[in-house]
Length: 107
Length: 245
Image (cartoon, rainbow over all chains, first blue to last red):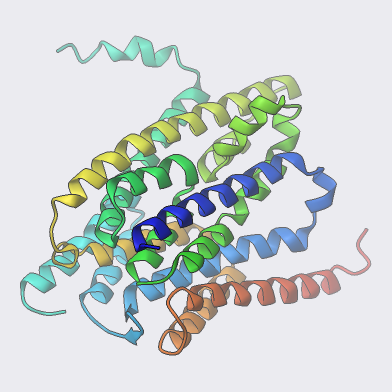
């Protein structure tokens, strides 16, 4: 099976599971999941995954830990977030800082 | 061009509809970064568009292409995307008092557009009577859900087509852009100490496992941190509340 076909299958599976998750919420009787522990864990899973994705995307290449222009780009993005910049501005600042450093020959 | 033209039309929209359109445009705009990042990660324009049309939940879509870019496999991409989508399941529950009863056909449509933004706008509505509240919440949900769907998909296509012409993604800093996109999705959720500690723990676990585990696994391992922290926090919370009704 080619990688191209494998990714189509993965997209189909992810989409089906996403829809099933969304639909399940509209079907279950509220009292079944209206449990503070389950709500707390669901919120924490979201936080943990986004933090892990940020870390892996910033500090790793393949299986190596690497410190390069991405780290400085993310620091600039963090500053933009602290100044309450909108999503697109944050993303563009991070990209611009990393791209500039690379244009200057670092990272 | 007469700049006053759109105003009467906008004024005819209810405050809820205006809110929904604002959220739709703002959210749709970052479909541009998703589209561009997806094609530079290695998916083609069709696959990128399929993710926006069918998966349709931003965080999971970014996670999916993050695994593709990292060289991970399909199973890891599906698992991470699905775990990140769990919260959408809880949105249907939170919306139940406002949205139910729903016919089967409406329920299927509502499920597909049950995302962060449509839920937030629906739950943010206020009304002097239960009937007004319910009508506003439903309007907010549908206008935001459909509005984001249309804007997100249209702008994903623009981003994907632009991304194809970019050449080397790192020269444009697109790898840093992807990291910043995840952080920007995380940022508003760092509003509790527990969330900050879990984010720190997840970061440490993911980085520690990167050299030794296949791509995608370190990210899923971070979910274990969340489940452990959630279980412990809840237990402590319950103990401190003992005696309360």
